[in-house]
Amino acid sequence: MGSRFMPAFADPKELRALQLEGLKWTVSHAYAGSSFYRERLDEAGVHPEDIRSLEDLRSLPFTTADDLREGYPFPLLSVPLSKVVRIHSSSGTTGKRKILAYTQKDLDDWAHFFARCYEMAELTPEDRVQISVGYGLWTAGVGFQLGCEKFGAMAIPVGPGNIDLQCEFLVDLQSTVLCCTASMALLMAEEIQRRGLRDRIALRKLIYGSERSSDSMRRRIKELLGLEDMFDIPGMTELYGPGTGLECPRHEGIHYWADYYILEILDPVTLEPVPEGEIGEMVVTTLRKEAAPLIRYRTRDLTRWVGHPCSCGSPLPLHDRILGRSDDMIIFRGVNIYPGQIDQILSEMDEIGSEYQIVLERGEDGRDYMTVRVERLQDVPAQRNPQIEGRIAEEIKKRILVSCRVEAVDYGALPRSERKSKRIFDRRPQ
Image (cartoon, rainbow, N blue to C red):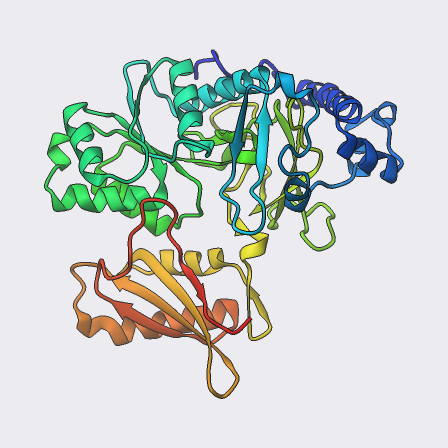
């Protein structure tokens, strides 16, 4: 693997030293520059000079999305406004938007580690990268573009949607890499097959992210597009944007950029570290971020540690793919269900496609009911519906301990999306 953008540390000991230096800097910088952080740290009885080891991270207070909304319009700001060269905003679903500020150094750092993503996916400057994610206030489009230009490949900034233009550029410009959400990739793959364009395009790789995707969805996309490889990319506006890690071609987990942030994986209820292999919430502390540093920011994203070093030889540690969000947990008849658990079961069924919906409703008897809608594969006849429905219902009952109704529908009957697919429909009275 080339090393133009890879980190300089050679082993875990060197990484820890680098992280401690970054942690000390972040706490001092935030304490000096942000009244919000100064107040929080004073309340917790922690001062910058108290940070002497990485264990001292545990004494620091948490930061949450609510803190970002309450600090609107410039939350966590730790530099004078004159140093801010750009803002980005996340597509907040409740209340005020989360707006994050960036200094020029923040943007340079982001471009550098995003270029590392392309390097890890083994792209070359000959690649043509079709960027089919949102531009504007969102971090996605400009993040993919900055990293691509820094890396030295050709950026084709198409943006989301506009399937005709996407197909036209795939054929005419012979794009070799597509960057988009998994939902958009499935939509494109099915459209390319429908239009008979497979032999006229040059796509080799897909970099996809922004939403949880199942194994069966990834298999379907890879098969329809005839891809050499596809890579899951995490990221969030609060932590620069997309590009904060990537799967390498060994696919043993997501390498995350531990030289730019410290990752903790904590039980969302007790906020204590979870054992290796158990699911917990990602909590991040930045090590170099100037405008809006994060101290123990609760991301609400769920994942788990991958304990072993990757067989690719990279010293960068691994976490599992994003397995859902702590706030998208469904409570159904007293059972806590993460949509990822249903994803997993459906991915193991061979007669259905990757799209599904979970509908929750309250019956006239006052009880809650769950319907799981799935699509049969194109070559599976409708006569197979009863067997498919029975098998899925049985598996969900066995593994998640809840009863549900399963409804198999024709392939393509469930809606496709150019952004993130909505799969949970909770129609119960709130």
